[in-house]
Amino acid sequence: MKQLKAIVLGAGYRGRAYAEYAKEHPDQLEIVGVADPVQAEAIPAKKYWSDWRECLNEKPEADLVMITMPDALHHEPALVALKSGYHIILEKPISPTEAECREVIECALAEKRLVVVGHVLRYTRYFAHIKALIDSGELGEVVSIAHQESAGFWKVAHSYVRGNWANSKKSSPIILAKCSHDFDLFVWWIGRKCLKVSSFGSIKLFRREMMPRGAALRCVDCPPEIERRCVWSARNMYVDHDELKYLFADNSGAAMQKLIEETEYGKCVYQSDNDVPDHQTVTMEFEGGATVSHVMTGFTAKNIRTTRIALTRGEIVGDGENLDICRFDGNPVETGVPLNYRLSNRSRHGGGDFNLVSETIRILRRSDPDEIRETTAQALQSHLICFAAERSRLAGGQIVEID
Image (cartoon, rainbow, N blue to C red; front, side, top):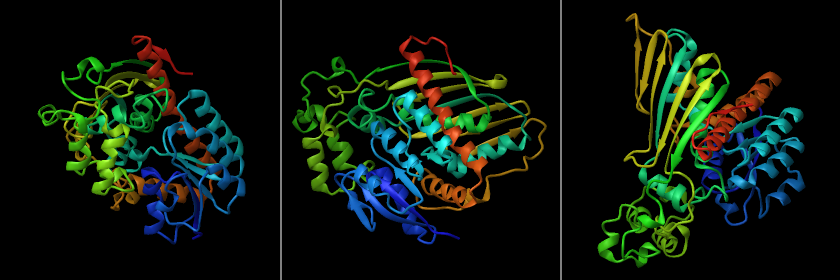
């Protein structure tokens, strides 16, 4: 089979995660170029650029462009890549605005190019198993889904209070940046369009008036008696423990110390430039009458997703790792996860990172125009739900219909 060639625009954590696939499967994929203003050489390639425009203006010989830059920088390179004849893997979200999301998908459809958005959850064994169970029809039709995204207290503090997605004006609303994964699952599982949305959410804790008396602007300057009791301590999160170090290309002790002394990641969580909710609930109605309730909260010990799906002839309950499947008539359920997702790999998101790249390669090798069009078009649906949910939240929970 033909080896595909790819360019990576953005050598941050997500770019490195997808590019790792080429190391594991050099017969399938080669990274021929990387563009990044700071750390392009973090990904092995034949050629490097400091700017994505320089890269695409040269029109390197490649089949695929992986766009893994900050959210606000997705729209323009996506359009340029598509019009230059490249297929793209586009890290979610497509763009922070609805108009730009629609423009990218419309361009891809017009150019007959494939857009695979980084909704990695649908490429994992666990979530693909749920899809297979629903599609089998053995449990009947979906009636309702109750889903909680437990974001984990440390993850919310890192990404949505101190980090790149803390301020919706600079990146994306949290419901888009974090929860588009989940809405993509609902669209995929139910197989129909969402019609109406209502949403509530706010900042419960991470506000200036909640700052402990005597605390400092930066954690390194905070009085020891206060910092030791603070679960959000930057020293505790980035220096003393390892849970978040994988996100940084240089995660040495010296680099982590510099991080908390000089960057936003060392600021007090009560004094950050954040405006996105730390909890949000969304209720959805789909074609055919199925309903979905989605709860996102940052106040959990674990970063997991729990799901309860009620169907007309059975029930599916999952804790993010294990599924409890009940068929009301007591008979066994004769279906399972697709074979290609059963194979283990070392990528994150339960193997979803590598499986997404593998699926992209499969689609491009098969080159079925209908599959390319359907995959590209479906990516937009989850984003439309997110934008409707944010409009509803800002309007105090008003029902918003999706066009």
